[in-house]
Image (cartoon, rainbow, N blue to C red; front, side):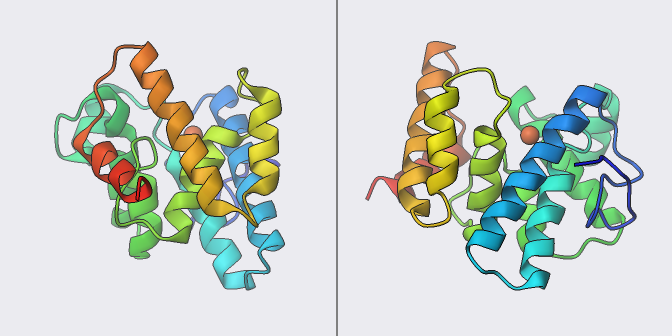
Length: 185
Ligand SMILES: [Fe+2]
């Protein structure tokens, strides 16, 4: 998908995005996966557009300088979290008012217990887009199952991401702990 730019980030990266070409390609694949899932679910056009918008926005400031990220996130957050809150704050300042889209973007790297369908879809699509270099067969299978078996796929994505964090010796953030607790029932 072409990484065109649009004011609303409904059909492309927002004009204020700071992303490398590699990142733009990743974002395009996440949007394509979200759109395919939304279509497979039979969601109405307006809802599909919201899923795509969350995809276009989620990494829009991923390659911005640290000072810009801190300016927008309004806090000195640790590395894993700062670019999501910064992109959400910037999008809000640019007139995006959809709270579910903004919350999906803000927490896409760590998970959030309050998420509905849209936040869960972005979290899964970011991890399952086809060009990530690891576990490609399993991730492709999970991506294919998402429209019909969302909850099982989310549980598996959480398990893979937590295992990765443990291998890297990274402590889980409080948002992640709360998110996981919801899915362990
Ligand atoms: Fe991403």
